[in-house]
Image (cartoon, rainbow, N blue to C red; front, side):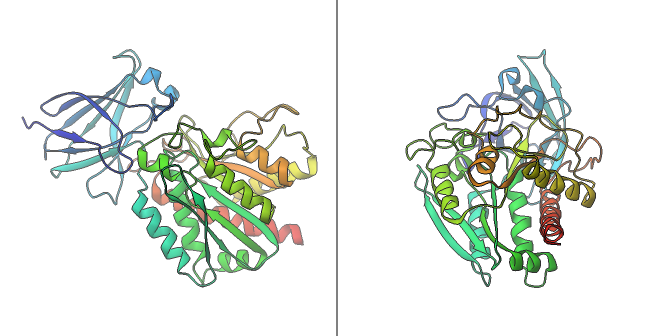
Length: 379
């Protein structure tokens, strides 16, 4: 039997190797630096072409979201372009919770991840290609604690002030795949949705709010263990400069509509979370959110409204969370878009599950829904 090797010392890599015996490995997920979150994994396996790999990720009862492991299948690729799903089972009673991944590679190298990774290099390609498009401005909002640039793209000549931002939680790579789909649409001069949005809106787009955590292989935090999506009421230069830079720019531009793009570990569905419970809640502002939700639900079977998060009680919304703070501070129609790590329970696609391709397609539906939301409001 071939003795495999496992590596994770690369962009967004994260795994601890406990033992290897032939093509069987015992593994564990390290926590985010200076934080207690552990869920994201990304590693490479070499050897064992044509042999079944058995990869056991242990200790998952103590992970950030243990509910994410039942009915979850790990992502796998042999070319780092097409990501499929490897057969996986979760046993809560084995070594404090063990996900067992079984996969037979055709080649000598295979890559495994919690979701299809979105690399730093691909991020820079995305930003550069969009910035080279006609009518697009690149704004360097600031610098992260690891010294990386925090980039924003602006476009459009309209009056509606729209903010789209993603990957506050770096292990939620679905969010930047969604951004790739959105930017491909918005920078296409022939796309009618893009033309309509750029006519009606000034769009402010941050494809990756957390470059440091992304490169470090974190699930949820930046370089110093800060969960950015709890910092919006009081961001600081030493703990959350990313949020501080984005919020300062929002203060300059104003916000009418905002979508914060995320991924959810446990819920097998795409859904929206609103801003119920903010101090300045009005039914009229809430109806703007619910109307957008209805439009998106009608446009794509990949979206639904039955599963999601509970609504905050009146006056009890956490203003450290982006969507709540943006709605409260700017009077904006704000929302959080959540996509699954698992497949959709009511519309599954077994080979890939929820995938980069579906993230990108969903982005186009979200933009089309936004255009309809704007045009029907004006009418």
